[in-house]
Length: 89
Image (cartoon, rainbow, N blue to C red; front, top):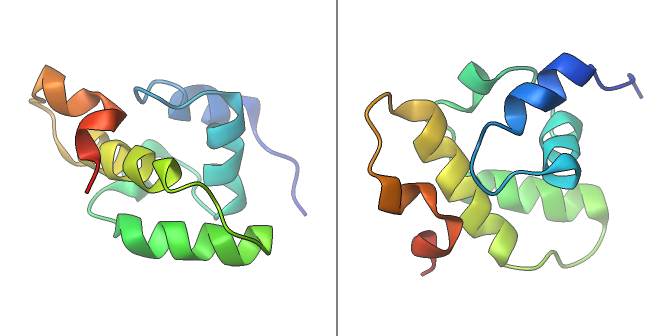
């Protein structure tokens, strides 16, 4: 496994709701920049994370992924949509 680039992890932490652990999850899923999250499918990201973890991952992670993709895909963002909990089913 490649060691995570601290600058990229810091870039991921710009995303509301993304701290050190989730930034590392994004790295482990193969993302190397915020731009790579543009227009990704959060459901696919969540499924891949569960496979990577080898177990069930709390569904809140899906909501964070939805928020992260929204953040990366939009320059003009609604502040309410920058809150991961507003992405619940």
